[in-house]
Image (cartoon, rainbow, N blue to C red):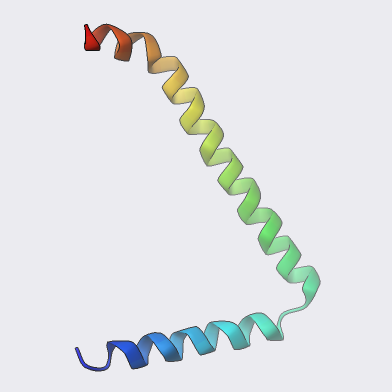
Length: 61
């Protein structure tokens, strides 16, 4: 348990070095892909809540 901080520091440094070694174009594609995935997830949640709204409102009464 004492080495948890050291492991996290080493993982962080490895991540930073990996990101610095990548080309800007690759980082942009990763960012765009992550953004698109996040937008899809948010839209899915909003649509599911919108579809379930009448039932949720009836359950409150």
